[in-house]
Amino acid sequence: RRGLPRGKVSFIHSRLVHLPSEVSVTSMTTREVLATRVTEALNNLFPDEESPDPQLTAATRPEFGDYQSNAALSLAKKKKMNPLQVAEEIAKHTKTDDICEQPQVAPPGFVNFTLKKEYVALLLQKMLADPQRLGIAPREKKQRVLVDFSSPNIAKEMHVGHLRSTIIGDCICRVLEFLGHDVLRINHVGDWGTQFGMLIAYLKQVKPDALIGSTTTSLGDLVEFYKAAKKKFDEDSEFQETARREVVALQAGDESSVRAWSFLCEQSRKEFQQIYDMLDVKLTERGESFYNEWLGEVCKELEDSGVAVRDEGALCIFVGGHTGRQGKAQPLIVRKSDGGFNYATTDMAAIRYRVKEDKADRILYITDAGQALHFSQVFEAAKRMGYAKPETKLEHVPFGLVQSEGGKKFKTRQGETVKLKDLLQEAVRRAEEDFRNRLQAEGREESEEYIKRVAHVIGIGAVKYADLKNNRTSNYQFSYTKMLSLQGNTAPYMLYAFARIQGIYRKGDIDLNQGHQAENVQFILDDPTELSLAKMLLQLEEMLFLLERDLKPNILCDYMFELSQRFNQFYENCPVLKAETVDLRTSRLALCKLTANTLALCLHLLGIPTLERI
Ligand code: ARG
Image (cartoon, rainbow, N blue to C red; front, side):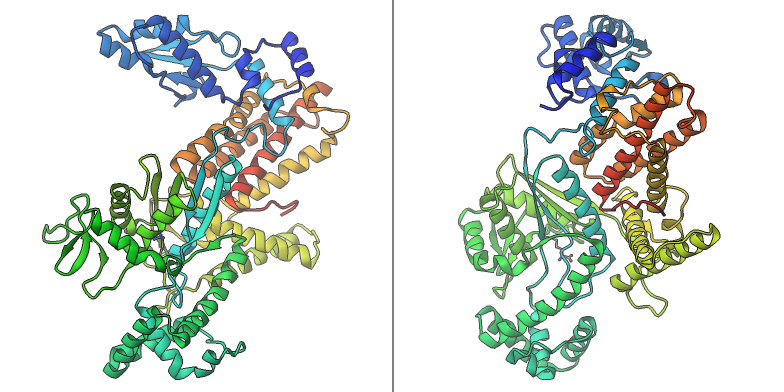
């Protein structure tokens, strides 16, 4: 149970408002409290309706109050009644006078609820008393969520698509972790497949010392190595034969082939790790090869159960009527006619493992939208086979492409794919340049160490934020200028807002941990901008619940942006340090503190640390 200590609450009670028992004893959000109340009214009004839906949402416009119920509309239709009248009845029978003003009815049949100032003030106190979690309790029902993200491929370039997956995946993990779920962060690295035949064969020819365990051998640029191997493969038929034999040898567990394979994986792993370190993202690697030992068994189970059938020598699952180009049914192939397994086989084995061994309740796959068909087929097949239980949630979390400023594919001027490390370093370099210019213009000084830290946080933060603030399903344009701007919905703007607001609160010199206990702060919300800021602060929890369900990080960015706008309006209208009375000053300083803490928490959930000065 979270909330204020008992004794203090009753003091506030008597002075301000009577709280219904569920508000102080459970971790229900205001929306949930209101929904319960409307449901009670519906049960009384329509006793024959089984579990009526209160249809309670945050209001879509300020003139509709804070929350609205649309229940009257559908009920009236069903019962052939006048919706406005039904709405009137709901308004009359919903007990809300402890937390809301008199509910208002609006045509064609909405019931609008506006929170009482006193109630808002009380909730703010609850937030203030809990600076780490801001009054948001972990979910009582915790789930085991497996997030499959990042997942680059060995010996190939980790590209901007993988960067998006890494950034979005990490944010989703952070939010789910914050809400109290058990999260498994899995890197499904592409470390298996026929391309390894070619790579190993080539490695044996050009770097034989790599195979005798020489730790100093480095391949240099792995992508160049891949290209060279591919070139040889395409040109030399004898080499093709060698490569094919290598695939067979590797699958049979031949020692030297396995050693060559490990060497290649190790080289790639080092490169991937550099990116993860820059981004400060943690993942557990469990590549495709992890599932090798079960692929045969999985195919047998699929065939025995009749879920998969043989078609032209291949073992196929016909799912969902997905049709290919000529309207021909496009099956999921789990074993090719030459006996080889593929990407889909591994994914079937992975679901089986994740449900059976990891006990996952929810599995998320963060990849580009191009893999939507693959996942819908795999999910359907896994459900049919019983690898996923009926209640297991399998979700593909797709995202759009990253385009360069010209709206083209992400390439350097020379037509090469941009290297992720260079892309991130360039953001940091530009952030440093901006910061040095700012310091010079403002005559400020900072240590070299701090400058480097600021550059890193802003540069990497800007790349992350620019990615997360877009609706993930849309394509977005990568622009250093836009993402590094101090204006607009950007990381530097948010970091700046945090530092500035925190500065105001610090100047106020009230220490809420001493003397001014949080519960002694009386929030005064008489100015409309104070109330509007306060209500926005209270919405964080509901935003996080939305994100938990829809897995769209832009919800959080939009929220922060709106919050900072409302803060600016408040700050323009309401003197803080020079407020007329001590109580008002304390209340406003506490609003500043809550805003700063909220921004810090949101940034943290996006994977961006805060800075004291920028
Ligand atoms: N390695 C794949 C790629 O680069 C992504 C893997 C996604 N995860 C999965 N379980 N299939 O496209």
